[in-house]
Length: 205
Image 1 (tube, rainbow, N blue to C red):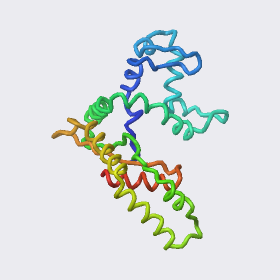
Image 2: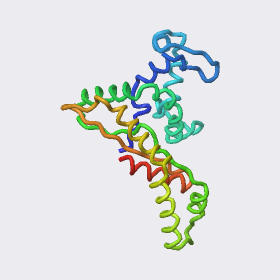
Image 3: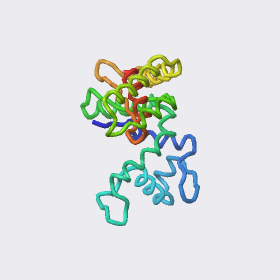
Image 4: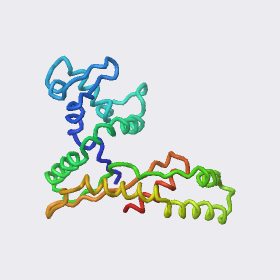
C-alpha cells in the first residue's frame, strides 16, 4: 500500500497557518487556520483549498476538469514545505488516528531517498536501451554501484536519510503501536538518478 505521511493529517493546515503560509493562490491573501475554518467570508477560500489539496468533490467529476488521478498527483507538491515543519507531530497524529481505528501497525513514507550524481557514470547508464547487451548493462550498473558504495558523499547522504527517519519516529513505537517506514524514488527521473536513489533506499533500510 502506497501510504505517504504528507497530506495524511489535518495538522498540516494548522502548521501552515502558524507560519502564515495558508495563502490564496489568486489574491495572495494570508489567513489563519481558525479564521479559515470559522469565518463565513473565507468559506469559499476554505472549500477551494480543500479541493486543491485533495480529491474532494471529484465524485462530481465532469469532462472539463482535469482527471481525478491528475488532480491527485498534482497535490503532492503542495505538502512538502508544510509537513517538513514537524514530521514528529504528523506521525503522532497518524498514530492517534490509527489507534482510534484499531490499527496497530502502520507503514508510511516521509521523503524520497537521496540520489548522488556521477555525471560520467550516469551518462553511460542513461544510454542503455533495448539493444544493449547483458554485459553492457551489468558493467554500467556495477560501475555506478561500486561508486555509490565507496563515495563519502553517498555514504553521508544515506546516513543522514536514515537518521532523519529515526529522529522523526522517536517515541512513536510502544506496546500498542508500531510504525515502519517505506522508502521510495520517482520512476519519472532518468535511469541514473533512479538507480542511485534505489541504492540509497536499500542501503538505508
